[in-house]
Amino acid sequence: MSNPGGASISAEQLKARYIGTGHADMTKYEWVTNQHRDTLCSHVGHYDQLSYYAVAQNESIGRVRTQMLEKMLQPCGPPPQKREPETQE
Image (cartoon, rainbow, N blue to C red):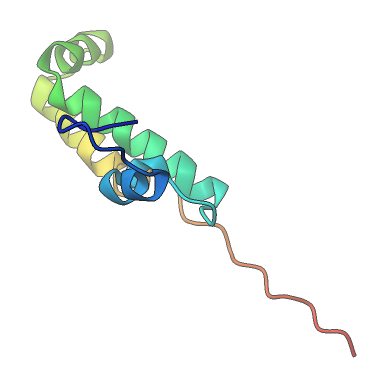
């Protein structure tokens, strides 16, 4: 892969530039949360999609936008509880 200047870009540089590309230590919850936030952001950013959802839900465009922005806080619910490693006694 290369950039407009013609120099190659490594995978590490690409992942540092674009947060949504993930990394090896990313959990499934983090990955799905990023996907949902990207989708909601796209819907809010494209007025035609936003108006389509507003008509389908029989709501105002402002209300649908507000609902989507609020949903971006925790789109997949609260994060799962982290398991503590079991110690052998």
